[in-house]
Image (cartoon, rainbow, N blue to C red; front, top):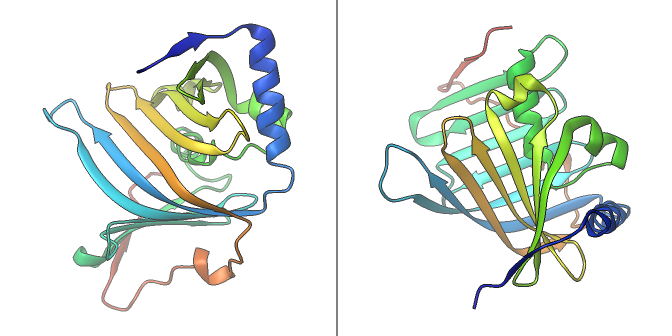
Length: 212
């Protein structure tokens, strides 16, 4: 049975405090995930499985499919989205020279691991908090107007017992949604720099879709 309840502002502060406290000793993280993409042009959502790795402050690696059909790797100020079967990759620079709108939107991929309350408040406004079947569902609106032009809301699912990351969902301005449900999470696994490094093979084409 589905049970959902809206909670109070005091509860919101308690959840945010617990969520941030849970990040204190988290340095690396890995998990399996099920990704569901709901597109307006499709009657049925697209469902895929994959693996994700994260290391503070902002490094991550997503592998969608087995073997990976899509790979997303962020290290420092670069994000690479790689399509191995097409031998093609897209580079998105995230440094100061990057397009502000896209940089803000891509930074939202790190939503599940805020570094501090100041960091969270600078990037988001809390718009909702509900408890559904043993999980907190936190609704966040991007603080910057440039980011909101692409992503209207970020929804984060947290375990009520330990505030562990259970899910993330991006609600885009066109009404489409991208949801990730995480399982088999491992806290502080040993990850090497190689997890977050990608070098284009000689036969790959690398493009930069975004204007600087």
